[in-house]
Image 1 (spheres, one colour):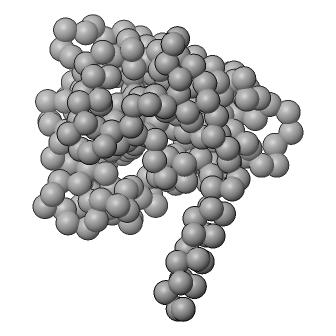
Image 2 (cartoon, rainbow, N blue to C red; image 1 turned 180 degrees about the vertical axis):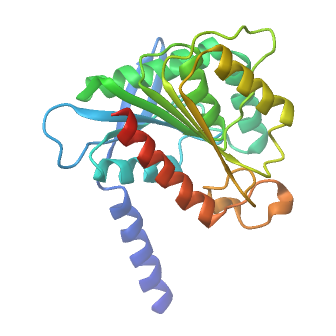
Length: 254
């Protein structure tokens, strides 16, 4: 009976956690996508908005939970779906294939992000006050939103991939940029970091990059565990500090 009660309470809590938002279907050409929208609380008129791009396994609870928190702070928050309603990775191998496709086809990635931005506007968001943020694969997407000159005021990358194909030229970077990076992330090379520096300088960007000590890849992901030797692990201090950095950035942008 005790175990049944615990399971019941857990199920109810899980449902309540996301009761605030709703699933939203939208289109990118012929592709049907399914995101998660949370309406701003306590904001009159058109609220500022945030597109949240998921990590490589697809739209997950981490992205949804971020949308929940941002909704409570007065932002229209939309956890986007890059892969599509019928393209959910079953395992890490499929996730690697899907995420690699979008990384290697940045114009396609940018178009998917633009579709999410347009949907967020349709949902009652001020089109002049939109930020794109993302985790890991989604952090790369946030930078691609800036590279693609999408209609956003700012972009934020949480432990994202920072590099791009060396054949691509560096263009003007108009949105404000915030990069939140684990200082010990083994998946981002020094060459990629230096390339980002060069890109931001040549793009005349208004940008910031914050390093978190003792943090590796996926430092905001509790599911990543605590074993740093795997290269991806949760870091509570980095998680909390990076979230505060995001909130400060949003106040500045808006």
